[in-house]
Length: 70
Image 1: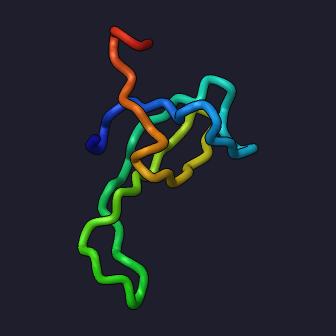
Image 2: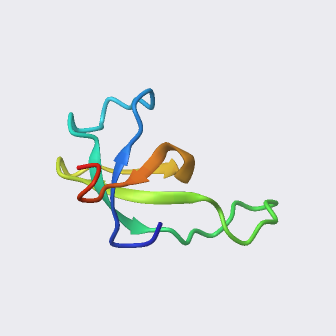
């Protein structure tokens, strides 16, 4: 997954701020790790949704939307 990918949040992952279609655009994947956290890369993506909300999800809870699964 990379910035610019259209993704859908997997069913079973709930947040009241999610739009009904659960689809958003990845706008960031590079975060500074929290103090005391050693890995250089976190498997988290920041996603902008059509309702204006920006939420962060672990990549395991997202999948890229393509013509085959849209």
